[in-house]
Image (cartoon, rainbow, N blue to C red; front, side):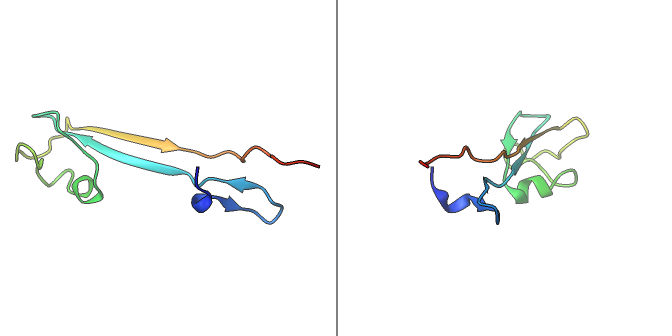
Length: 76
């Protein structure tokens, strides 16, 4: 894995940032959308696949990934 997304704390502890992803599933056609623009269109916008408006029954999925310290490696 790349070290570009590692947060290094002053004491040398290393963490990966927490992330989250929101997805909407259209009630009419089951299309799943996940771009910020599409998610932001809920509940007033329309599904980009079928063109029907989102409804109160639209399924919203949120995945949150939390972090823990990286395992310590190296030699003494």
